[in-house]
Amino acid sequence: KGTMIVDGRQVEFDKEKNVLEVVRKAGIDLPTFCYHSELSIYGACRMCIVEDKWGNIFASCSQLPRDGMEVFTNTKKVQKYRKLILEMILANHDRDCTTCTRTGKCQLQELAIRFGIKDIRFDPIRKRLPIDKSSLSIIRNPNKCILCGDCVRVCEEVQGVGALSFVNRGSDITVAPAFNRDIAEVNCVNCGQCRAVCPTAAIIIKNDNGKVWEVVHDKSKRVIAQIAPAVRVALGEEFGLEPGQVTIGKIVAALKKIGVDEVYDTAFSADMTVIEESKEFLERFETGEKLPLFTSCCPGWVKFAENKYPDMVDNISTCKSPQQMFGAVIKEYYKEKDKDENKGTILISVMPCTAKKAEAAREEFEHNGVRDVDIVITTQELALLIKEAGINFEQLEEESFDMPFGLASGSGIIFGATGGVAEAVVTRLLKNKPDHNTKDLLFSNVRGMDNIKEASFNLDGKEIKIAVVHGLNNADELIKQIKSGKRYYDFIEVMACPGGCIAGGGQPIPMNLETRKGRAKGLYRLDRISHIKSSDTNPLVMSLFEGILKDNHELLHVHKKM
Ligand code: HC1
Ligand code: SF4
Image (cartoon, rainbow, N blue to C red):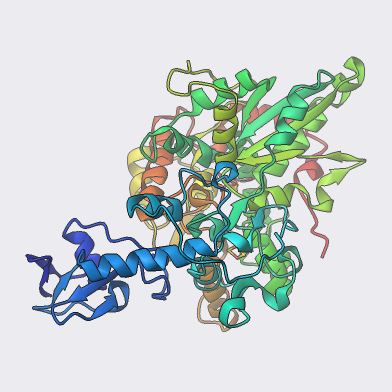
């Protein structure tokens, strides 16, 4: 607690972690590339420099605020150094801005404009490096890297993966996977969180929009799209709306305009997942075998477990994720009709997640040459697709999902927020279904952004212990505690990205606590207004279980090949 003086004005501080936060509290937008409140402080970019009353220049992110401390943010010296730093970064940065996917949203470009950089006085000293296109999810271009280290820290500190690090020294320094290998050859789980924090286009989403155009132009194809829960509360941000605003009607309309024949809801197949997964849970709970049961819908988590805890893979549910269940069902549903009409059904997934691209491509999701899911695009790619098609999103008339796979329960929709899957499974298991008021109370422990959440529920006199984790480093911590016997649970929901799918690596940026909370709120609002609360009361899902799935439950399960 204390008071600082920023540019001659008194500013009180209390919980602010560093001088930078106090300056920002004073209403001054100090620039930075490498400071993220959720990551450790690195102090590498030095864009946030300030000057003290003795003329010393320092990075404000790396200094604690002190009572009586006086700083200046716009002195001649500060302006000169800041420009110099920017010029040096720009000298070594690919400047193909006209064709860059981050143009208009690049922090480097933004600051170059803001600080009036016109000429760059230096020649590049870094040599050009190859672009790494090995991953199905992300593309790394080291020639656009400004060495802020954000990706390195998010991958290590938030995801506990550590797939990226600084390699080499001096002017050869760069960020790369271990031993300079391709990213697809290391332990990367495709979560895309590195892309979400990258200030430039050094890490971008692999764009699969070309494949979408190809299939919608092909008249021999029946083109179907499924929309993940989290997309509907985030896409609007790309068109100037607040996080959490629901634009699902416009998303359906836009996809139809682009040429998709039928548009369905992944929350529908999330309802199917709930039915299958709760059945599986009850069987295991009864026998006490292979507990805790871990959820299987997050491909980043599944890959992490395969890499790091192969001995626990059997504890992961055999249920396919909703994305894959939807694919398996739709391909079965249209099998005969496709033969009769001499057509091929193509399924496009619109997901908040970069890892879903890798999930769809896994070998176990192909049967007799037919893939469950053919193309996966992220929320960001959908926004580009809409812009490319020249669709005026604001003026688009809303449309409803197609039937029969367009009706989902609120439980299926909240899958997109951390805690949502656990809440949906427990809601399904409870005999007396809670209304939304009791739900808010009952599930308060599994909702929200705490790292590790716990709750217990009484089911026919037996207590079920549940944990919810998001962020793979938190999952790692929890597993260590389970293995050491410090904690016990029956059911664990794991989502790789902090906040769950709403903050997946394919979502609009910025990704921060505010956007996460706003998007989660949007999903819970949809649950509150939905007529169907519990997956087992979704009549269309139940009729599917009586219909094509009756003797074909295996369609919904996967036995992972290790
Ligand atoms: Fe998710 Fe899921 S909730 S994994 O977060 O289980 O991506 O939104 O589609 O599959 O339904 C993502 C979201 C999504 C699946 C569902
Ligand atoms: Fe790390 Fe995820 Fe990026 Fe892979 S995609 S390098 S796991 S942050």
